[in-house]
Image 1 (tube, rainbow, N blue to C red):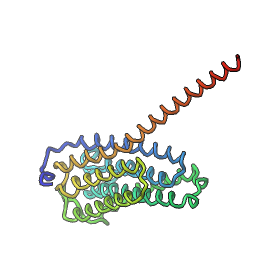
Image 2 (cartoon, helix red, strand yellow):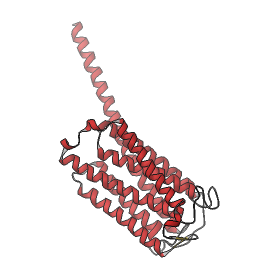
Image 3 (cartoon, rainbow, N blue to C red):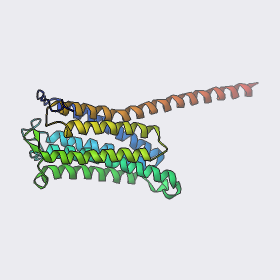
Length: 269
């Protein structure tokens, strides 16, 4: 990626526009996936919904801590390393949730009797939401209040050599999630699109943290556009599936009305 380090103009307004769209996208996706969990009572679906909720919540912390947006050094008591570390926690967390989804999905298919759905209640979902939000808050606090405990990965707006090691680890988690999902056969349509999302996620991390040199270079902007694109795939799939289900429901309702009208006509004769 020879052009990833080309320095471009600083556009601070790009970050809130991009992250606001991303947060809204992931919140809607999480809500739709939690809705599917309410129907299927699948632990795998609960794990995936939690992953999207984690990304949305952690992205909020990333946005608030970004230097130069709401305060010169960022909000939340952020230090010079905080925003970069929140980005790493965010982009490592999602692949871990996908790995959990792939493992749970395989187990549910192999041993359906081992995972009784009646044990998964609304309280289970609420407790999971609380745990995910707590994990996100803990990551943000570690990166802000506890940033002195973490290695230095930023020098002003440029990355240090340590960033390459940290970003490489995040990259490995993304690849591991892709492999885990590939091995969790048979693949659902959702699984295929999740694999596409992970491929885009790998490109996001590569451009934004591995091959570029810091903030506001070509990789910084291109990687985030890849991230927003990847986040939209699953939402688009869920919306299409929802539309198809509604159309089938409308067709079934029309057929029932036609049959009911036919029975009434037969009774009158």
